[in-house]
Length: 209
Image (cartoon, rainbow, N blue to C red; front, side, top):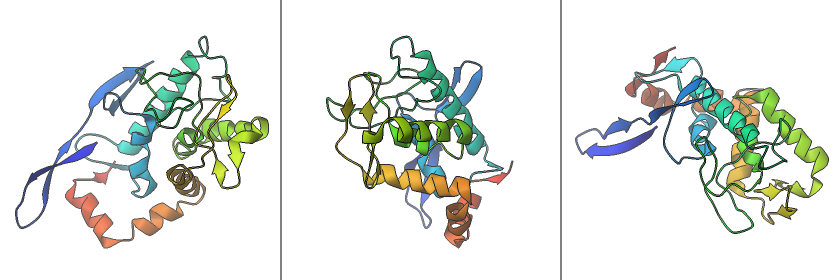
């Protein structure tokens, strides 16, 4: 979901542009072509979309479906990349051994090579907690080079032995925010107390699901 400038008036007006519907292994959800997993995460870091819907969707449930589809997509790649499993999945825009790349799926986006992006699963904690925390714990326990002083590296490839040298703030940010939202809902409850956040949701047409 994105917003497009329409025309200036006394009040800023926007026209919502909603992605198209995708289907994968029995799951149907709204997304956009060639958009990695993070697009289903970042708005949820602040706005609490649980039990709410607008004219198009319940976006919290939509992100659950999109994340589930992404996990199944990664598992389907196991014949090509033997590291992908219930213990290791999650691809989103990140560094790679050949530089920055936007990758993910379904459908396949970018030159997937078996790399793992830890913040892809960390950012999914409120959507698929059991499956996501399993991956994060597996990485901590089996790939010590992927965990540095400030958190998980941006990406690593268990097949080639490549590890990114960087721990990136935006990765740590989405990981911490979504972990706390899953744990206590603190970020959601604090942010949603702001009158502007409440008014924005109302003007956008959100109602109880």
